[in-house]
Amino acid sequence: MRNVISRSLAVACAIAFGACWWTGAHAAASNPVEIPQSGKSGKDAVCERVGNRHVITRAALLDWVADHFSLRRQCARTQEDTLNVLVDPEAAPGCAKGDISAARSAQYLLTSLLRDENPTHFKVHGWGDENRQTWGSGRYMRELGSFLIGPSSPRVIECLKADEERSKTGSGFDVSDLKVGTWKMKLRQDQNSLEADRNDKEAFKKAKSAQFSIADDQLAKQTRYDVKGTIGLDSDWQPCGRDMECRLIPYVKWEHTLTTPKAGKGDTDKVTYGALGVHSFALRDLPISWKTSLDVQYIVDEKSLSPTEIMAGTLKWRPSFTLPNGFIVPGKARPIGNALLFGYEFGGVVRYGEALESGGNPIFDQQKTFLYSGGDIDVWFMGREDSFLEKAKLQLYYSHLFAQRGIFSQLPYFAAELSYALDKQGLVDIKLTYQQGREYETFEEYQVWKTSLGYKF
Image 1 (cartoon, rainbow, N blue to C red):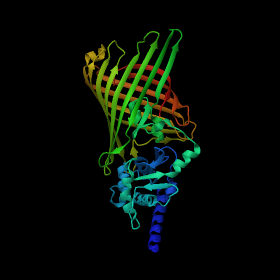
Image 2 (tube, helix red, strand yellow):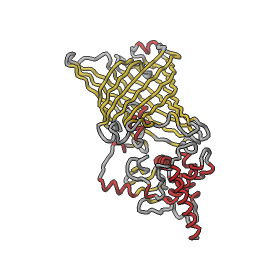
Image 3 (tube, rainbow, N blue to C red):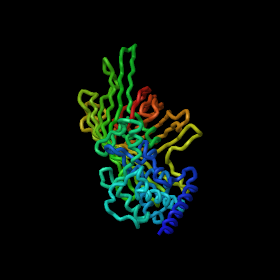
Image 4 (cartoon, helix red, strand yellow):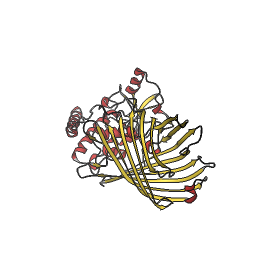
């Protein structure tokens, strides 16, 4: 038996060595103690605090495995793909030899984790009295999913070192830990920015912060206050079918502009109650994947004597293409020199709605029902980590919609934002924004420069 175990370990070590060589710059972990526990859940860590302890979470572990073992290719586009690859690498469609070798290394690592071979770092709860002496890696991988179904499950993997490091540092409450049940609470400028998770540094940096500004005009003896913010609850990605993941984000958005002592022409008092549903679809045997979002809204604008009430929805489609060499377009942001990252995404937009009450707004007096379609593109430049531009970001957005039904034949809109983070985590920033054109949510027309203070979590 010892000889068999020794041979098995030798083969596993050889596979792990081969995976390290194949992945180049990313040396694969071969011992569970190397699995990161501290830091934010995601790329920095696979653990999340639940109550008074930390446990391994499904999304964080599967994303970390895919990234660390370079499985983000044709055979592991989603978290469910990654789990399937771990169960049977040879049966996963689209996996090259290098992917299979890397998956075997990941199997070895996770099998060691589930066998309780590192009791000082992890504690596995939920095995009961099962006799696991004869289990191989395949059986452990088939059982892995049952440990990743939620923190309230009787089967969880507790992260002992995460709790230990937290007590040593004495770190207290973090606003990004706010939850309602298992739903994460987030504060951003708009609902689209709510998709970004703080553990994804690039996406979080791209997300727009809620803004607050004050402009004091001594000549006109007026003061203008401007507040834009959105609070949402994020379900996070959940499997919703083969090769598919979904997330739901209900939110409330406030947009208030107030001029004192007399009301200004551009004053607004708008509240939007909405729900953003996002669906990600990535077939492993096709070179195209896409993300579709449906944003359903009830908008109340009280800037007139009586409120304007609108029911509307926006459908967005974001495609992504995998080239024969594995290069993904548009994909993640890519480096430009040593200081900058460049990223972009584009897609189609359809906006449909109906004015329940016009509130005296001439725009909705003339179009009770409206339908517009077209496209948009989002481009961003941000400083690379540890560069002199690390805290800077420039984001450019352009949309152009055409009327299928409505009083405006076209809706061109451009927005630019230059921001600089004032803290290391990127929670607080100062930004300069410019808007020109007519946005498609309530058809407000803009041509304005603005400096504001921003905050997000």
